[in-house]
Image (cartoon, rainbow, N blue to C red; front, side):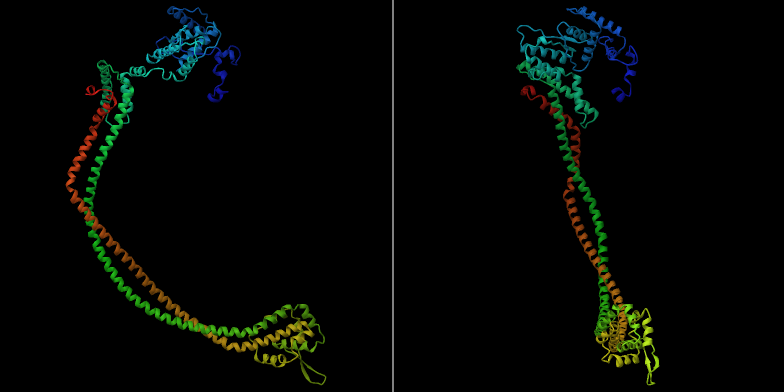
Length: 624
């Protein structure tokens, strides 16, 4: 599944050369899968590859066994069957790995030691094994461990530390073995003098050069300077190492020159060089900034003088324009005041006319308010009547006198003519009932009464209504109600029309006068609006002049402030140039000298760093 998912290959396809029967690869077939580098010669580069010829593999291992028996004081008589070959191949593969280690499990005499020794011989490793004696203790163990660590680490000899379970005399042995497997060494197993000696001898000359190049790679310097610095670092280290030998010969005092001292030299050099360069750059930049300020001040003097020259005419022109604006504003202010006075007088006249018209209007409305409630009440009474009520009145064959009186009054108001009839005495009389029935037969009878033109009743009609009906005691809604509820509302409507006409006749002259006053007021207000527009126009011009005046005043103040500021700057710049003009040449010389010192500081710093890193333990005579 893993092959198919990750490598997109099928297991049977990859290992088809191992199958002995069928197309499926079995676990027994996988035993024939060997990888190793046994076929290469010792001392030459070996290729780790799959071994497909098992017979050749067995023959090769037997040849290695023969070579081992020839060179060993304890020959081994082994039969290399397939199981043994598998174990030897596994041990060889383990030894090939960095810090490779293995635990061989089995009973005594099963061949663990033999296959391990042969695998070590095939891998070109030496065997190291402690010899357990009766008096063997932890001190002996420590010395043996130190011996194998020196052999494998310091001398660089590939070594197999062969350790059996029968050799465990103390649990400390297993702790040290565990530390070797995990870390590659045992902490604090070497005293300080032995450790320094090992470290010192472990550094070849080319290592000094490589370390110096690596740590100085980020330091800013030319290729030639870097090359000489690396050479001097090596020279300091090697010369002090020789000096330490002489120091020991004369004073019998050991002074170790370790890689730590070499690293301290490089570290001190980098740190001190960075600080000194920063100090030099800071000082040099101060002079350069001062020179830039002088150049800037010199350039600004010319600019500010030109600016002052350009600002003065502009200030004069702005002042002149401001004075002209003051004159215009004064003249326009007088015009505005005159027109404003006229408009205010016209407004007073218009306000008086408006007050008079409003008084007339209020008086008319007050007098009309007497008649309007009665009229509204009559209209409300008409609203209560239904067509059924009107039909009942119409159906009366011989109506009461009160009903006839009400309908006669309505017929007169509506301009309906009566019928001429002869009574029993032979006299002619006017009969309104037949006309009334026709009037009542109109389906819009009540609507017509509500919409009656009450403002245009002819004087003879209203006079007749007033003299014959309204003044009659029997023409009373309260009395009519007893005869017909429908005629009561009609009676109220007739009386309300008479009251409205009486009041309207009184109000009519006043309404006419009100209309004339309002018409005159409209004309007056039209003229007043024209004058107001003219006033607003001149006021707008005056405001524009004032705004322009404010802008000119602001511009004048800004120009005065800029001229003052420019004059102050010019004065300060001239003082600066006068006071520091003599320092310019000295600053230029100092900046150049600091630049040269910056380029030549590397040698001084390197020598100082070497003294700090190496010469501390030596006496004064040796330091010199």
